Image 1 (cartoon, rainbow, N blue to C red):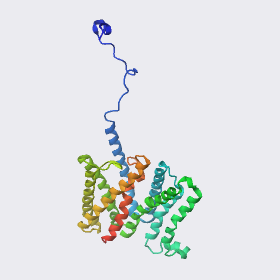
Image 2 (image 1 turned 180 degrees about the horizontal axis):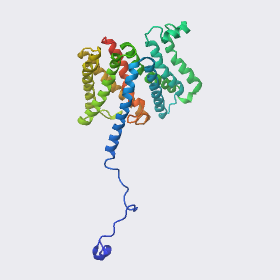
Image 3 (image 1 turned 90 degrees about the vertical axis):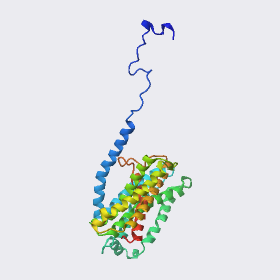
Image 4 (image 1 turned 90 degrees about the horizontal axis):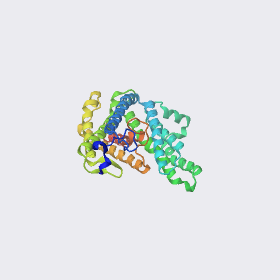
Length: 333
């Protein structure tokens, strides 16, 4: 350093003041990541504190109230799915797709209701020719979608993909979760706690499987499960999720189902827990695949701490139909 660079008894030059352009921009706060994690989990807890009692009450009530809840969730999920498709350049028929998604659970409810003189019987009295023809009515839905696409999309507007996504949305977001109505109606009458807890059996297995998988992945780490689809998931976490599903199922039977007279054998519970947990993880990865193609992290920001409807219910889209079949196969309902 030259002799005159630090005059006045070689004192250091004065330090720049705050805001001086020579100072580098401030970096992120050290606790920013930790604070975001705490905030996100607090939002999850608050949402669960409201949503779980509400869902419990509606499942207990059953019937049309539950069908309307599923229809509302189906409409929101279909909107998110169509938004993902639009990110890839496909333009589905939003209005028609959402309408079909709403009609799907209502149609399943009509078919599942077993009480005498129910809504399905009323419709068949209005139109006797519909009696026993509901599968044919459902089979006409693709024709309706293609007809709408014929009038709304030209050859250069990817009509095949438009029709496929418009039809897939109601099936994925409307038909699959409607299996909860089949479980609820087969499990017991309206306002039935035994039926309510039976419905919550696959829900509890799914939620605890997710928690076991998350913490197992964090604590154990290791090889990635599907790095191109969901980089945060590990094989160790997947195994932990399966174990958590079995543990939850085996614990749920004596703690929740036995007191209300709906218990079944623990080996059956273990098998069901394993299969439900597997379905939950596949459902989660399937929705992640759709988001990766669309280039988004969350399907929306509708639910605090969870993202969108698809993010929250992706596992249940697979779990509920699998559970309905397992309940039948094992003679639970």
